[in-house]
Image (tube, rainbow, N blue to C red; front, side, top):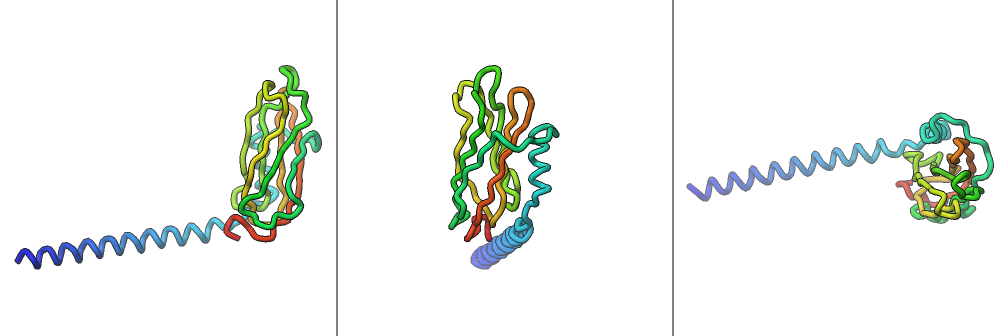
Length: 160
């Protein structure tokens, strides 16, 4: 009699685990299809506007350095530099980097202080396809500057 009880308990557990596994697979599967929607230049501009408190960015002072062609979008090096003396009176407060064609436009943001001496940051990012990468810098006087660079991606790094 105890053998029969153990057998039904094991079968019950297997059925529960199988059901949970199929449920998890269904959830993951739906997440894969919805995340492929790319950002747009409008969404990227909205992210910058939110970051800058609604202030309009002026082109200039910000340089975005990326390779002309990224053979693999999984790891694309990027450097953002801002023309600033980085003194107490005149410095960069923060920088945001957005990618206009990625699933989520916001890539990274940095907070800076005059003690850095140089307004330059480097990182690596994933890019899903050929697109513009935009950086915006908020200065200590409240002004906002931006720079844009297009990079051609041959193999996407965001599932593309």
